[in-house]
Image (tube, rainbow, N blue to C red; front, top):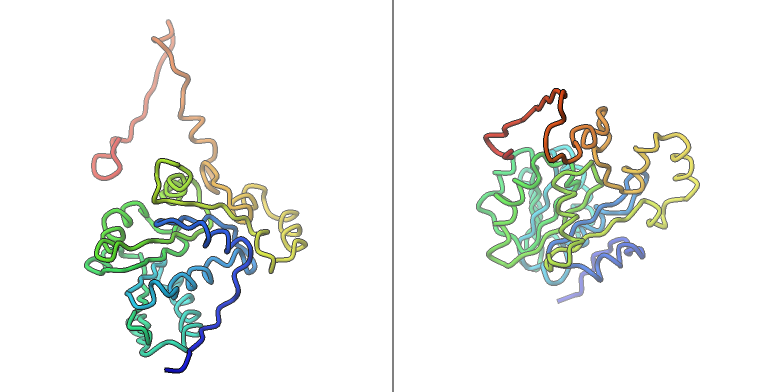
Length: 256
């Protein structure tokens, strides 16, 4: 059988660091803009490594529109090893017997019943109720093959993606690893471009979008909520003071 070569962009130093120190569940917080860290390219690369090529692999995007952009890129890059491509099902079968399927997380339940050797969740911070999608739908898809997962995103406040990133920083969570890679890690981005954006973007927007920092309240219009809603501990009430409390009972899903 002749050798068939798939040509993907060579990983830069930041991507190599991630690949070399990967765990079972991997969380990459990276800056966006321009060609960015190259997280989508890294994600596609993780979908065709020799250890997973003969198996089913799942790619998940927050919306259908975001999915189609990655789909077109994957079809182009993986054409040399594709044995069958279904645009209607967003499915690429390869000559090794494996398959790469693309799903939108507009409705996470569509992936129920699937089984994967690896999954990639792109722009994970933009997935509504990411933690629910992971625990109730995505994590069970990895059971049959003892599969692994990659979560790739620019931060968006301290949400489910941030919680997963925290797991990757916790030595007690041995199956998790996480990295924080600002846009300047990518050598393909000119520093002059980043400097120009720093001069014109709001500081908080630059910190989140370029430096890949997890801001307490993201880029919300309402800031300082955590500080405003947290009072210093007291042993008892102050005499003559009036106290007011507001409580969201959260009776259905997120629990008070």
